[in-house]
Length: 234
Image (cartoon, rainbow, N blue to C red; front, side, top):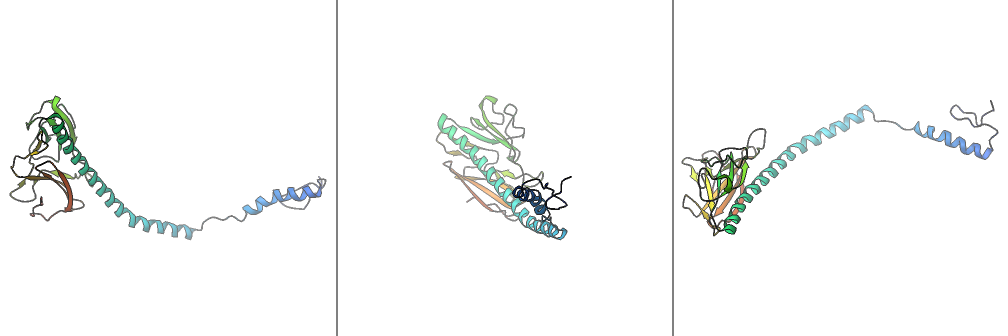
């Protein structure tokens, strides 16, 4: 075998190759292996420090992230219900007839078997054309909504038309709300305003949706009062 130039354990270029090319070829063969030998990995201590830093960041970020998700969920649910009321009011004005939103007795979302119930908004609700009745015709139903998802596990965010936090109960919209062709609200209680309450017991927050006699909806948010204290509708 021809002698190599230069003598090396990892590169051999025959001497009969031109000296200029010998040098270039040798550099191409030797340099990559030489550079690769300088690469190193992480030590166990470095990995442990990185994992510790990630764990601390997770402990700080996760609770805030959960709170943000719950707050966004409640905001979305309030907008959803306000949208339902707006649909009923706009339809009443457009068609020149009464449109009613009532608490529904089931949560399947069916438009053929739904009927109105008493003070059970947390189960679901529906919108239909006509004055209040417990069994509206399927052809008059515009929308059926199931109950709201909760903030934790199976716990639901509770929608109320009655403040059941005090005795006697403060009745605003116990089972239904009707919009007249003028856009005004028909309230069985005879008051000039009413409220719906969306209660998130996990975050101890209640969203109040105040509805004026003219049908204007104004949502606000407040801390859930202590047990036995009325949720204000102002």
